[in-house]
Length: 119
Image (tube, rainbow, N blue to C red; front, side, top):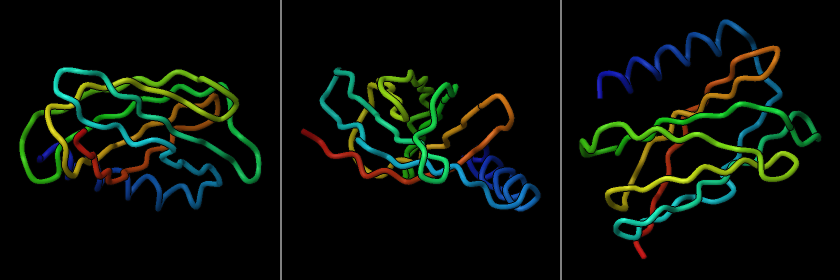
């Protein structure tokens, strides 16, 4: 949990120091929970009105109110501006995703909250 808090504080410092970014990250598909099975986690990345391609994206997932450790996710581009990662989660509930995008000219980090459904 300490890592998460430090990561959020660092993100706030980086974002406030770099000014507003035009890159927008949208969660297109929230991963679900089915015991022992992988689930797709899909992101849509745009810059202005353009879909952003050629990015290196990773995320770390932590449960919001319980300690299940940190789960690393790597994403691959599956269509113009869309990136898919596969993740096996230990349970449904509220998760926090710290998403890092590395493009040729910048490093962008965004923290989002996910509601993972069981099913």
